[in-house]
Length: 274
Image (cartoon, rainbow, N blue to C red; front, side, top):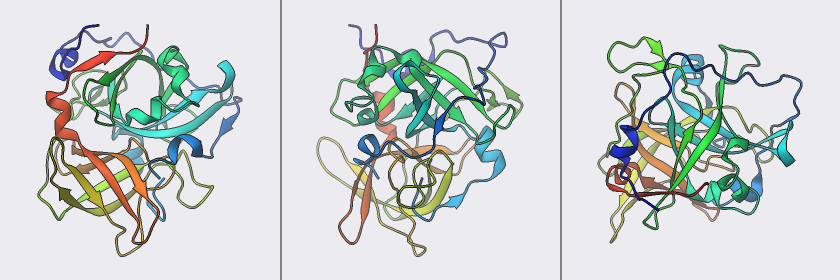
């Protein structure tokens, strides 16, 4: 199996203006409680602030859902961040857990959703198409969707199905970032809705890979079930992706870990679905 770099994947052809977004059947059964078995490794952000409408519908911060037994019911399980109109970064464990590993063979059963409304343009949803895992041990995955999301172009901010690309950046230890997730905002509730929290990223330097650690802020906001794969961002146009939430520890003081997103730039990827 070839192991292309991220740059090679970004240069691959994408579907342009002729692609239409899928409309979710409003009659379909929707499970708004996070799949805790999947999300428990990295625990919507506890006590999180509700994200702005523009951020929900155009920010490239998405929730991951899967068809239950082939559908039409869908179940929320993790979060992710779009890095182009057609590609996103999430946590690898979101797609290797026994409840969701079937998506590796049936990526079309994955639903990627941006926004909380019931009808377009309040939300967009696309089917999964291709899943890639890193050749390293890092806990993130790259997912390509079947049709592009409509996002503001980097060049002029016009909402389009092409021209969006998110930079991956680093921050110095102790700098604040804005972390996002669609998981539970309190035990057992709130999943599927985008929330955010301003948290301080502490750089933990290790070999061969370093990571960021996050502690609860003064409002006691911190990641929770369903925030796995969600992104922490810093100012930019669009905001740069700093880390991907992968793990949390429930002991006091509670803390969470984020893989450094910039490693994605040098990673090699293996396609895992047929």
